[in-house]
Image (tube, rainbow, N blue to C red; front, side):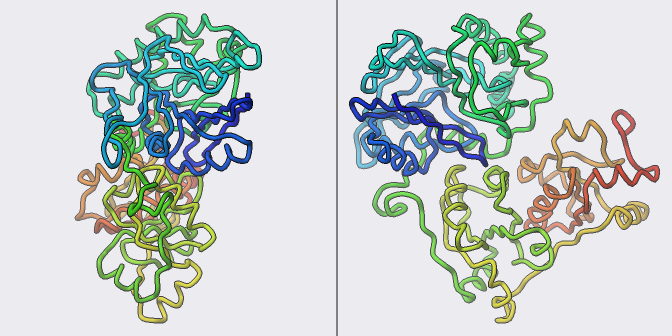
Length: 490
């Protein structure tokens, strides 16, 4: 048996390529949208992808299952859950007809080559969630080696049960989902200790609150040391624990749920991306001037120092770092046509990051190292204000700015600038109506990076704002009497 994890560091997402080396057949579990990566890995190991499976309808990335189905792969997905959690795209093949597929119930078994996959219904994170027990029958095994746990069991945590309510908008579902998850955990405790745990996410994912940075684990280890599993000593204790202090879900999660249920747009068909990952064209100075005139969507990936000193009006400051995909998905509308200010060598990286969160409308890219040529040719740029703690205190003393804290709610509760209002930066686009247009906005986060990105979003929407250099950490360290600790602020 062949097995490889294919990991996306930015979304902390893991897909699994599992193949039978005797027959050369392989399956991908929980693939992202740019499926050429899995195809290349399979081919390099003498395998061909004949099947694709999903543990559940994902919220944090756009699935590549339909993409592989268009190429002829057999689709294995859940038939558990109620009518709101059924896949709607299985009979909508491009050009007509249905994809080859099989809907799975608890206990159903299928084979890929000589490898057995058993579906286990594990509701709680979502109603339809499945895990896949994997047994290498070709190697003579009659017990599972590992289990692809999806968003049920992570290393050190469990998949959060509140997303149906907090992200997908199903009111009143967080507590019932937590109770369902408790029942699933009790079943997990009966699984064999030796079974390897292959989760769909790692540290940094918003699908839990305390995911570990170790890629895989075992059932026995998680039973003993996973804090969320150990909280299942009683149902009440578990529900209270699992619902406490979950981070705000990024804004794009609801859209991913919708698209993965209804069916993501297929990239790999003629006339829609040229057979796979989009390849945007390079823009000229004249092209860039037209972008400014049209007030089009621009992603500027340069460092903050360069961005604040001069950028295209309305551009978003989104450096190509570990939070790029999440920030872009939360700050850009799915219908926006995207223009990139970027190093040429990183265009493909950015495009892949964006299509994984459903942003696939591209016009082109402009070399970030050539903005001077744009300015020299009369191109318009603007700046973003940033002020020190001392200058910010003067501003506040004059009673001027509206203070916006864009950290997570749990961070805000530990201490914040007096009078600040908290809106997480990944939720800000949907809550701009709570930010007054008639006042200057002083924006802070923990260290100044998230607030810098929030400032660019605010400027794009017509606000006047200032980024607090060094963020709340610098504010708190200054401590001339204006700092606020937990419990001492309104």
